Image (cartoon, rainbow, N blue to C red; front, side, top):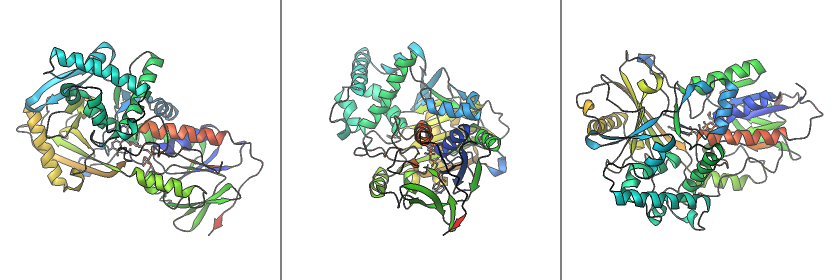
Length: 462
Ligand SMILES: Cc1cc2nc3c(=O)[nH]c(=O)nc-3n(C[C@H](O)[C@H](O)[C@H](O)COP(=O)(O)OP(=O)(O)OC[C@H]3O[C@@H](n4cnc5c(N)ncnc54)[C@H](O)[C@@H]3O)c2cc1C
């Protein structure tokens, strides 16, 4: 290593993992601090002890436009574990199903009205409104930041059928907020990114999924890189404050009073954990206030092991037309090619789960089973062999109206201190791509620092 400096990364989620991997790839000496006893942050596997099975803390889907995430997967050698299916399914109560193409012409056709009850006039209106929407994503009206996605969809004249079949759940998936509170600007920005990527690569952005558990996808490969490159990982190392002297980082104070010497720091913790860490940074008030205003949105994931198959048509199915709730069902047999010795595993995700998050787990399971029975005839007699409910009250930062422009950049007034994490400013909403892109930007800033002339070898105690 030519560079004697110590690069300390705080946080072992995707943003921190990617920062550590890319700094190590660049030949830097890296220490990764993680407050928990495991890596992966909000993307990790959870063992279901009696079954010795490892579903995830929540189903994660991956857009083909996630450039930085794919760079990360290539770095850690797990790119082969992402698949892009040819179709998804929309399902209405009673079991009515429409399969939607996810690539090429079938995908474009779905954009213009996938609802089985859409009339010709509806489809024409949907096509016109979709073009208007696309245009306004790229040339955004000045008042977009003041609108909810619901208001914007009304304004462009999107018919109800097209909203129900596509736009409302797509918007919910993009920003994890119901359309009546989600910021239209957030939705438009992500759509604009998708359109630009689609034009640049001459193919529309489509949705895929991991074909393995999240630990194998994100963590195991990173650990191999760390072993190879000599990255030191410190578990249960809770960072409390980043020390700054004379405009440069000198160390990270830990909860146990130890100080981890540092010449540069990537602070890759979520907005909910930033408080206190940046106290010595001149602009800390501004960043804390933004972190606070960005707030959180809840997601509840339910992993259901059933005694029989549900008869899905696709690996990913959106349940539409229920009591205002839009859930997604992921068929792990189709996605992972898994056996059914432990039963048939279905992962249900409820985004914007403001009500569900407060319910006891058995109630969530009962509700989800009732939902499945309404949508899947095969679920009528199905029995739950095992269930796991994963409530994530702070699943992502919130992207409601009024949050636009709050996200801080990766650069700070101290050149050796950079921020990363999905909540920092990127082209995407609260996603894995945002975490990976923020890491790429943060690492680029540190790699652009002038060459080092001194070695830090301090072990300071507060
Ligand atoms: C249920 C669910 C479903 C989702 N679905 C999708 C999806 O389909 N597609 C998609 O793209 N995204 C999805 N996301 C969002 C995605 O998971 C996150 O955007 C991404 O994982 C955030 O990564 P991060 O590194 O920024 O933060 P995190 O993963 O939260 O990592 C931060 C890490 O910092 C650690 N930490 C915090 N404070 C300290 C401290 N003081 N000292 C040391 N360590 C600290 C934490 O323990 C954590 O490990 C989903 C999220 C959830 C919860």
